[in-house]
Image (cartoon, rainbow, N blue to C red; front, side, top):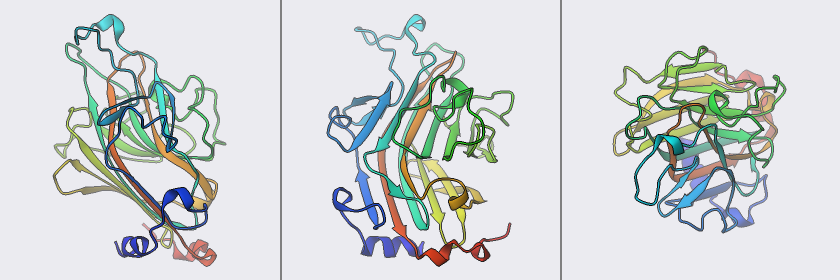
Length: 275
């Protein structure tokens, strides 16, 4: 996309960029120091390892065996970038690689991960495990100013299936969702999966593309989103993951993010693409 070229021209070091300036950052990998170096805010069950962040606990024993009695149930983890970024008016692009895996000797797994535009840097809400995916508590209403792209691995009664991506704003009832069942992509395959999310602040379009690592990205979501009516102009960006009565592993392998501010007149709704 042409705006990525502009973004690269205005690349600034994240540590010195005000929230209303172009900002880019990149984590090509993670280490055991990733949560203590000051670049990330890690809360809940997040554990850093060499090569990845585990957003929910790993059920390893000292002999590296899995035991069902130690599976991490009803857990939530959240990782956010250390400083707020501009959400609107702006062009945004982020790419990351995840790995979601079933545990050996289990028949099912849950619940998935999200990429979140959060209004603050707080931990996930209380009781946001399971189908709430670390973004909503079960008591919250529709007044939460956040946006999440979910990577959902479990079919709840309100879900289309247990292998879909969706857009959540005021609840985990996705305003738009796309199944991956017919694409050959299994979110909980244990294979690295690359995700790209782009937001065009001129046309108010959100795009989500997914593929196994090393394969061409396929676009599955093209959704009009008026960001100024959805989240604050300044947000914290990052990831959540959750398990419920069933569990699985949720790994973040790498992450890049860029936001490029636009002039205020880009907020005019006549720029909205009609679908």
